[in-house]
Image (cartoon, rainbow, N blue to C red; front, side, top):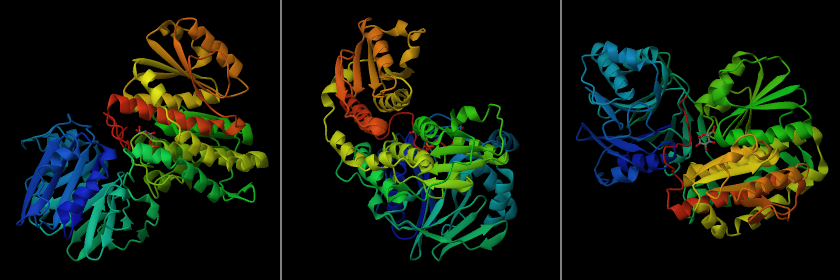
Length: 580
Ligand code: G6P
C-alpha cells in the first residue's frame, strides 16, 4: 500500500514523477513530492490522483534530489494535509507501511504541533529529535530502527545535507535502481524500468545513503555490499501498448502467459521442474482476494489429480484460527504482489510452526518469495491493473500443474496446449451487448456449484470491484436456504454451468430462480431453458475453467466501461495490500 520513489541525479523531479505514476496501483487517494531547490527543501502535495499534483510541478527545475509518494490512506482521511511528504524540523520523508507504536511516540513528543493525523508525521518528529541529539544521520537512522515498531519503507531528506538522500526499510518493499552515477529508490520494479533495469534489493533494517557519488548500504552499523539484480524481461514495458486500459492489455496477454507457463513446466508431454507435493498428506492453501479464488480452483485440482486433502483459507482468518500442524502438512501461500500483509503473516506463522511452506508468487524476491521455504514464480509478468486478470490465471494454471505433476495425466497435459488459442478466440469476442443488460441492475448473484462456484467467486469479485454493482457469489444449491428471498425482478443472476458432474443440479437451482421472475445469464457449455441470456463456452472437460475466466473478466470490464469508471484504479482499492 502506498508507493514511494526517490531520485538522486539528473532530471530528478522528472524521474521521480515518472516512477511514482507507475506505482499508482499501490494507492491513489493523494500524492506529493519533496525536492531540493537551491539547497532548500520544497514540498508540494495534492488530494486525489497524481495528475492533480502534476499540474503544479515544474519539470524544468534543476533539482538533483527528490522524493515522491502516492497514498492509500490508513491513518487519517485522504486529504492534502495527510498526504506525504511529512516534515518536522530538518527532516522530510515519505513512508509506505504502518507504525504500530505511533501513539506511544506521539505521546512522548506531545509538545510538537502535529499538522496531520498520520503515523508518518511521528516518524519525522522522532528522526528530527534524534538528529538534534546525535548530529549524525547514520546514528539517527540506526536509533530510529531500534525504536520504530511496524512496517516501513522510508525515503528521507535532511535539510542539513541537501545533496544526500537516505532510506530505510522493514517489512515494506524498497529497491534501489542504479545507472552511471544516478540512483533511484522505489517500492517496486515498474517504477525504475524507464531509468534502468539494474537494481539492489533491500533487506530489513538496511540503511541506504545516496549522493552524487552513488549509493552506499549499511546494516547493523557496518557498511555492507549488495548483489545487483538485472530485470531482463524486456516485454514487461509498463505502457498500455495501445490498449485503453491496463486491464484490457493484461487480459490480452493471458494466452501468452498460459503458453509461457506451459513452456516452463512441460517437456515431452510430462510435467517437469515442478515442486513435488506427493509426500504431503494434507495441504492448506492461504491467500486473499483473487489469489484465494485461484486457491479454491487449486483445491479442486489437487484433490482431483493428486488425491491430497486440501483446505483453502482467507489469510486474514487463518491467522486467528487454531491449527493442527504436523510434519506431513504443506502450507501453500498464493500472492501476486508477494507483499500482502495478511498472507505474509500467515506464512510466518506456518514457518514458526516448522511446517513446510510453498509460495506461489508473481513478484521476484518479494517478501513472501523470500520468506517461504520453497517458491514457484508465476509467469504473468508485471501486472498493473488493480483488478487482477493474468496473474489469477497464472496462479490457477500453476496450481493445476502442481496437481498434474503427481498424476502425469498425458491426455490433459496434451489438451493444455490447445487452450491459448481458445483464449484468444474468447478475447476477440464482444461482450458489449450482455454488459448493457448487466449494467441496468443494482444487485447481482453469481451462482455455481463446486468448481463453477469457485469461478463464480472470481467473476463476482471482478464485477463488483470495477463496476461498483453489488454482486455476491453464492453456491447455487445453498440459495434456497434463505437467500432466495432476494430473488425478484430487480436482481440478476449470472451463473456458471460447465461441470458435467453437477450441472443438472445447478440447472434445477436456476429454474427455481427463474420461477421467481429473476432473469438469468448463464456462462455455459450446455443448451437448455435455464437462462434468458447466454455466453457460450465450448466443451473442454477439465480445462473449461480457464476458458470461462476470459468472458467473466471481459464482462466486468465492459460493464465498468459503460458506467464510465476508472477501470484500472477502482475507488478505495490498492493492488498491494500491506496493511492488516
Ligand atoms: C488486493 C487486490 C486483489 C488481490 C488481493 C491479493 O485486495 O485488490 O486484486 O487479489 O489483494 O493480492 P496478492 O498480491 O496477495 O495476490
